[in-house]
Each structure stands twice: as C-alpha cells, then as structure tokens.
Amino acid sequence: MPNESQATAPTAEEFAILQLRVTALEEFLAQMATILECERKGFTAERMNAWLDMTTAKMQMTKSATLEEVQALRRLQRIVVG
Image (cartoon, rainbow, N blue to C red; front, side, top):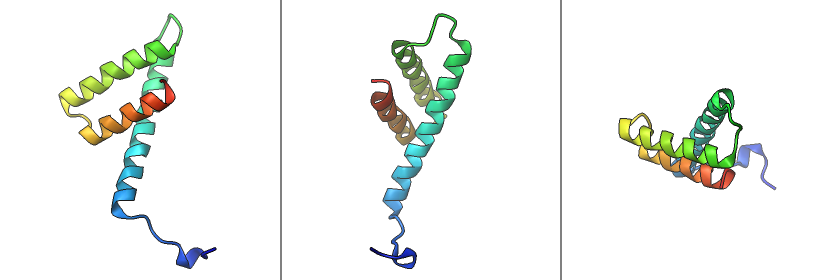
C-alpha cells in the first residue's frame, strides 16, 4: 500500500473528467432546487427530465455551458433521473 508521498496525482485527462462531473453535479443540484421551489403540482422524475431537457437545450443554444459540460449533465441526468 503506497504511502501519501508515493500517491500519484491524477492525469490531466482524469482531472478534466472529474471537473466536468463536479460541474454537472453542481448544475443538477441548482436545477433541482429551482424545480422544488417553483413546481406547484408536485415533483416527479418526468417533470425533472422535461426541465433538464429544456435547460440543457438552452445551455447549448446560448453557449452558457460548454458541450462537454452539457454532455456531463445529461449523463448525470440519465444516471439519477432515468
């Protein structure tokens, strides 16, 4: 078992992937908080998917997120919401 001084740092690619996953998690939680705050008819997975589909399309259209960030968010959406 390597000690702390022998631990290897993640590669640039591994770090970039991790950073995308964190960004996707942050965006997902922000979207979820918005839905919970605004949805008057009850929160469902179907409504969450519809909201995320709309917002990710807008992110791409306005270029407010990179393609990689949008793809990471969509992967997270499939994992968490289905």
